[in-house]
Length: 282
Image (tube, rainbow, N blue to C red; front, side, top):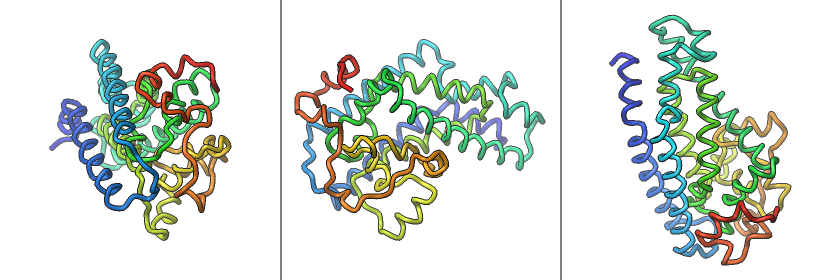
């Protein structure tokens, strides 16, 4: 199948592919957590339901925006850039069709560049007060399991969509590479928040290149110094390169998770999470 036809297929079925993969990975990780959980803390069904409902509302907000302005979807932006020959990669690799070598290099550059851009988005969300008010909804959870990987405020999801689309447009990223990054980002968001432990040797080897649950668990520590570290989404090299890496903790199975100011039960309801950015707490 020619590359153009592959791109057209992925463009037409991007949302369905992402949704099916999310359900499969979510089900597998929920099963793994049930069989062998790493942290033995109680996880109430109500909390998981709240996280999933919040994820549904956030997804609906993003879908509504895309429905109003379809071109804002990252994969659609990549298709637009390709048609208009717009963006850095389309200037560098201007031949049509691309050779296998050019397509491969463009694909890898896209994955790495998007991940670097999302690292900085995440890091800046911890620095700018108005972005932190949205992002702290994710950090306010007092437990750590796979549903935390879906717990984001709708406002943050919409801003992330706009930011990612702008990066894709400037980069001129190919459609297939953008969809692959979207799938990687979603898959790793679930995996890195899973309440599981990898074998120690595998953990060390994977951690050299990828974010693991053990590394990301530190990012959700109640200690704000550790919260402001390990920002990587799936590549761990950015934290080492930009001096934001924090070491694994020996007590990560029992360390407190979340934010000091949002530990009460009434701060964990769906309504409280939606209104959280309006509060003045830091």
